[in-house]
Picture 1: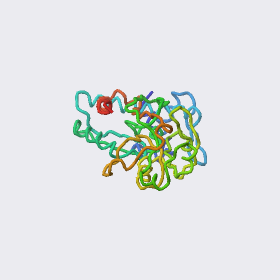
Picture 2: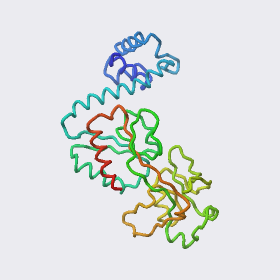
Picture 3: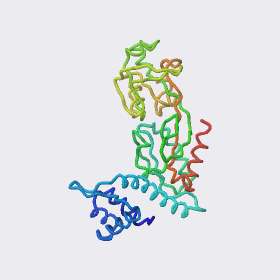
Picture 4: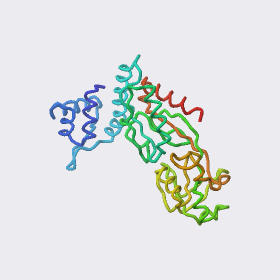
Length: 294
């Protein structure tokens, strides 16, 4: 398959028109059309269809577009890996993490990477669904999950964190300490919303679950911890034993620690197309070694 033809086709799909794609690639619209027509000739079936609303994909075009994006990413990854052979990691590392992951959990890792690989720059973004981000914009995705993600990912468990309930001592003194699941339902409850999970269903250590009606549902873990520190209620969060910086120790305490909770794996997933790039392999290995003692 001719890569210029494939790139022309993918650009038309993503921009929605031949004119916009031609401007994006810096070629004439005539040249772009010829490339797409040549690709359709190779495929033997129409890939695009013109409608009053614009260019749309045929069924065959949809299949090619999905796989074609990965092929273009694999090509870019191959070229990048060749350039980096024999050199320390450099350039930009694009990392997407869960929304609200406590900053003081990430700060040491960033410092470690900068001190070890000073030529490496990190572009960190946060998402409610890190695995749902466009593949061509992610080098590493940090996320929670018991099972490896489906699709073109290589996934590694780097840490197992305890998920449980926390509240401030002040709140519990004011509202009382719940001694059972029934008593818990009478409190202000804050639920962490993990991708694919129902925030109204909470786990028990016996492997069962129970239903609640939270006053707050958010994918932002740090927001829940802040609300608990402010004495506003009881929150279900991962990393329940994590200390909060600039906060007196013992301010947050566990609630029903022998009843509610579970272990939740923290994973780093890498697009398969990037897995063999030296930069990715070295950084991933370094992160896993740094987190292994935890």
